[in-house]
Image (cartoon, rainbow, N blue to C red):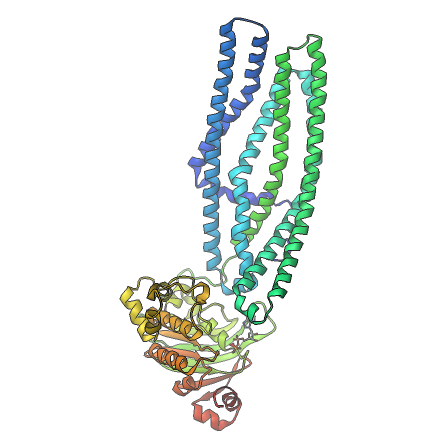
Length: 588
Ligand SMILES: Nc1ncnc2c1ncn2[C@@H]1O[C@H](COP(=O)(O)OP(=O)(O)OP(=O)(O)O)[C@@H](O)[C@H]1O
């Protein structure tokens, strides 16, 4: 996302067309707005006529009833204008909210379904900025700029016609003045568009930085890097401000130029008209009417120029949103997904699997990897860092697909299954459990949303979490804080285990925590894991002696391959990589 737009010179205004389906969905609002727009525009265009009538009648000293009628006419036009404007504002603003809500919903729904490859390429902070800042720009366009643009266009055309009807000679002069005001605007607006996109990208950079570091605030503080991060953030914000300053500077110059040109033209026309009134070629009311139409036309051109900027910025935002919506998930269900057997026996087979991460085409993570796990078997994966252990789990969960080879569960190729159905059958307990800022109960229930309170508590008991959860001030209703910061590492792990127990999936993938726990916590976690593993096919990335000792088989991995297999004693006796790892990791 941080790569620059490959075609920045091409006006992305067309990208706003992608908004139409969202607008069309609310056609009642849209049509109501159009009607209100027609009424209010007609009323505002009649206003100078009404004022002219009022002035000319007033100066003629005609009968009182004529004056009354003229004033009544003017007030009626004002009433219609008021109602039309209120309705227009209401409908278009509501339409803006609806469109933005739909767009935001659709974007979020899309993003959360994209595969891991996509999320590895894109920083989550930047995606959040698309969901917030860019979507806000769209709200501005739909909720107001679009309305202003159309209304101003109608007014410009209507006012121009009325100018010619009022005084062809003066109108011809005005026609020279208005384009003179418009032309410099168009040129400057083009430049502004490029600067705007740049400015928004810099804001997104700063946001991404904040969200990343606030999300890892403990790491930052543990390294005493607050000042370093403050500096980095200040620098990012400063760059954003500097880019914004260029944009604001251009906007300021444009505004000044516009005012000069606009009032220059008005003064000129008024001066020339004043001479016409003096020589009796025109009534004072007609001159006022003319000036009012000229102000309408000029004002609308100015409004157009102003919203033009906003439209350009929104087009930039929409083009980025469009890019995201165009991303298609790399991992999708086939047209006719095969279903996994019910009940699942729990047999796992990886056959001649070659895999490299999309971002690392030259570095194979797994090479000709073969592993067969029998139903109910517990296999421990052991190996040095970077050996590819976590990659095996990712492939089983189909976060990625291998480039070569086949992965089958109960004989069904995982590529033939719906990934969601596959993941329903797998429980994952990650090394670093991910808890959400919700109550303990809700966090456990994440494993199976329809589980009853009793089931949640039963899972917590098996996971050895019931005791400490009950001791919390609000028990199961205690809020755990963002990412579960209010719990200890071992407690977080037990919540994750409870979640997996509740899910009750036949396949279990376990990435054992490497972080040292105190002996008591360690025992509780170990006990909870035993309860979880019972009766399930388990593949565990093992870091503890207790786990390897209990495994039916230990698989030793190095550089994406299996280098040895067997029991703890047999592998120790070989005195190979395993013996070395065992000495370093589990045998002090
Ligand atoms: N998302 C990713 N994008 C690119 N390369 C990756 C990604 N994840 C892992 N790798 C690389 O793939 C290789 C295998 O990584 P993997 O995480 O599977 O190792 P591991 O055995 O689980 O290591 P550890 O025990 O340290 O977690 C490593 O060289 C790693 O740098």
